[in-house]
Length: 168
Image (cartoon, rainbow, N blue to C red; front, side, top):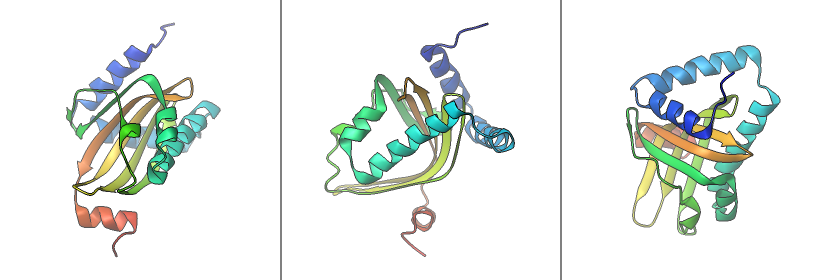
């Protein structure tokens, strides 16, 4: 039996994400599997960790954001096939007091320690607005997020606002 290491999962997830349709295909296949077979206790716990992370973003709770990530966590964001180089996340170093945060998960599921979800974000800051429709992939180890990959699907502001309930 082969032991899966964190670096092995990171290599797998990065390779999967580098192909244009892989993220969307994986989302659809895994979602069907999860719905057909139900989620294991480990998978339910992994989803809860990611749900709590999103809640911390919406609450602008930097202490909970920092606590959600492992010390060696990596983050990358970009379009399908265009992820940026993975870096250490620093979300908890941002002053969210002057921002309006809106993150809404549409659907999520897990396969073992890997959580995938579809969500809409709108982060309105004093100098710029960051928004998008994303597929997030998170790997969980020892109750912490070790990898967070965000695939941006689009930036249609009207569609994002409707999905977030900010516009009719």
